[in-house]
Length: 406
Ligand SMILES: Cc1cc2nc3c(=O)[nH]c(=O)nc-3n(C[C@H](O)[C@H](O)[C@H](O)COP(=O)(O)OP(=O)(O)OC[C@H]3O[C@@H](n4cnc5c(N)ncnc54)[C@H](O)[C@@H]3O)c2cc1C
Image 1 (cartoon, helix red, strand yellow):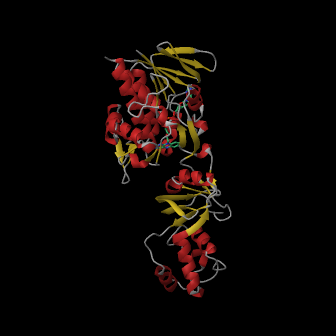
Image 2 (cartoon, protein in one colour; image 1 turned 180 degrees about the vertical axis):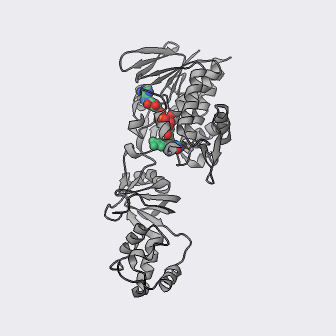
Image 3 (cartoon, helix red, strand yellow; image 1 turned 120 degrees about the vertical axis):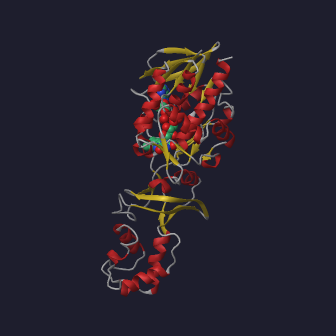
């Protein structure tokens, strides 16, 4: 039995290994000149490949689909699978799992080399442009007119994020041509745009804290973690997680802001105490023991206490309170996010109603399966998206094997 994998990214390579291991004749069709380019960039080159806390609550999309995939491949199962590929995994305090080597390249090599050892054929530079059923087989045609046939096809073309690493909309076009519906797509994990003047001079500054997204009268989401400032942007894991709800709220024309708290748990008396301890300290250095210096200066400026040469002893009670309020509730406009070039994941995609939740088979084209980010499922930052890639690939592969090996 022949299986065609369309897209040699995370999900495609994982599915290829699972199918070839059981003896199927597998061909991977990849449009780029090499497989797994996006995988190399994951986790800042370290590849955060799963999360011990992976559960449907960490995903957006029909929980039946995510639940079925997590049942066949929970996080420990993924770690065992990587151990079988020779990749030892380690986890951090937040359950994020990385290869012990801290090298995404090692994860890609493990999948790619295993696929080759199992006899998978990898055809690069093959951009699948047409996919259709003829008789009992599925036909795959490239842009350049090359054709191939298979008994089963796994569509693993990913989403729109990071076009330089292969992100594109091809999978949606292929599925639409077969009658599938595609939900609108937006960047899901991406830097948030703010007022450039408010964060001027802060590029590269990072600090842990709490970030809340407030839209209209609602608090839409609260995240704890790293906050990183850029050119007119706020990113870091905590802020990037807000991209999805922010983009959805802005589509409804809601006015949104970020509220940043750099010292959760501290009361206003801490600034009074600091002013008493350091009466001669000028505003430019006043918060240097609490935050990175430039951030401290931005916060006292935002508090409107006057010149940076002002001494702590000259602060009024209202001014001390204003500084505290900025430290624990700095409000910045959230006008959108950077686009797909800077995003990690796509919100939206192939509507799940067109697929069987227990197998990921298309309801319209028998023996065609869709896995990974091309489907309308997206997870939190922290290893959840790669876990979906592996687990959805495993779910589809099990069904293909059940049918192929009777
Ligand atoms: C910078 C960055 C960092 C990230 N870090 C993490 C992380 O640490 N942890 C985590 O969980 N997630 C992370 N993600 C998200 C994660 O990488 C994706 O969710 C995951 O790769 C999706 O897997 P996939 O197989 O569905 O798609 P992809 O890995 O994108 O693979 C799709 C493949 O299909 C190919 N293709 C597309 N169209 C065609 C066509 N027509 N014909 C042939 N081939 C085609 C593409 O070239 C690509 O190789 C990160 C994403 C980015 C951009």
